[in-house]
Length: 476
Image (tube, rainbow, N blue to C red; front, side):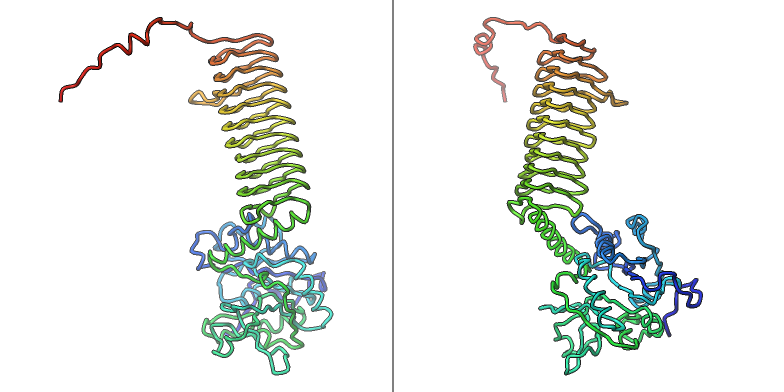
């Protein structure tokens, strides 16, 4: 039995860009050992699906085309690509050689064909660029990326002749005892000459223990020189097959991210306890303290102090801000904003320049004007607050009436007394005051004072009389 091209192949018609680089990303693996409902290639590494790490490495080559071989039964892969590259379906998973054979004739260029895996997120684009450069200089039919590992288990071994020349690749499950002692392994990354690859690919047979069509067997069938390039950093070839390897890749990638930030002028006081996602941007001279987690598409400006114990996700933080032990999600902070410990900014929070938020405060879907202070234990929800206002401790904008949510408006320079409850919809005008402990249900005109309290009553001698009462003894 031989591998056949995918349905729809029509002869040997060549693409217009015959000499450009084609990248083929193999992303159809089942990932059984992940024990997950999620396709393996969509498991994130440093906040980015590992498939997209491979796509990013491919972009470094500025390829004429990028093809992604996918399993049509796996949901979400197409959506994750978001229109990048062109998918090639592999309906039956019959091995890596079979996967590459699904590339239809219109994409089989005679130029360089780079093959990578979607589950090797640590592979760098610079490494692929060197591989293609070496391949072109050598004039080889194929150039393999190899690595020397202390523990080569799980990888195909590179078998060489006595003079060091490449002889073959032996998959571990098919390797003899002496071959398993070889430490040089196949990374699974190749740069082929398309002219030599396609004729050899369709001669593949599945005469092995797995009954699969191995791409590695193409080396025996290809006409021309087989060259190798040793990788400088063996961690780049780590393939993710289970959750342990996923955690290993996560740790390696996060350290890379932190190293890059430090090179760019960011202070990371303890890299071992700081977690920053791949798509986060941090400005120069910002300090990130231990146990801080900055994730998603967050941007942090210059001269900020983040943490310790800060959690920031998908937020924009301007220059000179301080976020202490707080939780921010989809929040926007202008410059010189201070967020105190244990405060929470929920989606839609927009804080203008110089806003100060105390401890244990919560803000949601609200715009806070420049210079305004929100004291501790306040909950400002669905509100528009003007500039230079003061929101006293314990203030609550009660936004929900049981059926719908309503907004509160607080004007410039307003002074909201401690423990005020503003029952929305309600407006507190510019320069208006509310007395501490008031429940405000009607609009407060500009420049006025609103007081809502019952009269205080004093009962003289109450304590002595109370303490003088005899305690009733209960009978058993």
